[in-house]
Amino acid sequence: MVVLPGERPGVSSDPEGGSTMNETFVTVAGNLTQDPQLKFGRESGVPFAVFRVAQNRQRWDKEAGQLIQIGTNFVDVIAFRALGINVVECAKKGDPVVVHGRLRIDQWTNGDKSGTTVQVDAGAVGFDLTFGQAEFRRVRRPQVPGADRLDDAEVADSIVGHDAGRAAPDGPPSEEPSSLPEEHVA
Image 1 (spheres, rainbow, N blue to C red):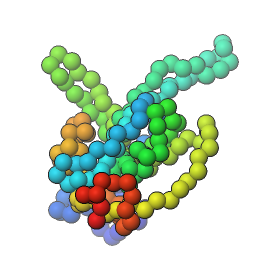
Image 2: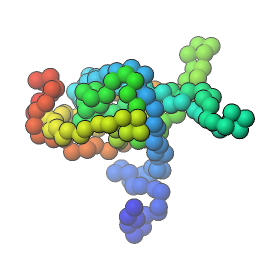
Image 3: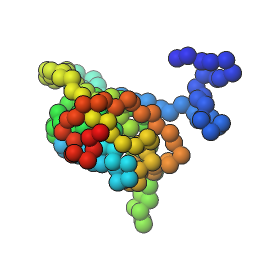
Image 4: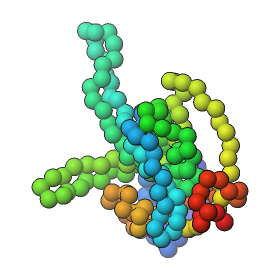
């Protein structure tokens, strides 16, 4: 991490003169609960994938001399642009995956029901090679429209507790076409 003169570690400058605190990044290993779904932002046309990862919680049982399952965590994941497209094209229900990204925990209330949603805005997704083998294949993606992926209403609808003022980093898009619908190819 590079800290420039006048900056404090853990605080990044906001383009509008304010500052934002670092966000929490997590790595989650688990299995996909269903096939990832590809969606496109209503306004921006930015492709993104939504999927859920089930992570078994375990603890050591001294009497049995082994790990025992004590529950399951379910984590909603959203992956944008080329990452989202690649996840949809290669990952399927039941696949063991490792997801790394920004953690978002939201409290919600719907009438007399309330709960907590845990979501990860993925920066990287890969297969957990503890349980099998995979082969990497490089693909090029078309340029997709939209400057800020979180400005789109459909994306915001997919993110529980979306903070409209939060900026998100964008990766550089590729130039060559793939399996996107024709209207999304530059």
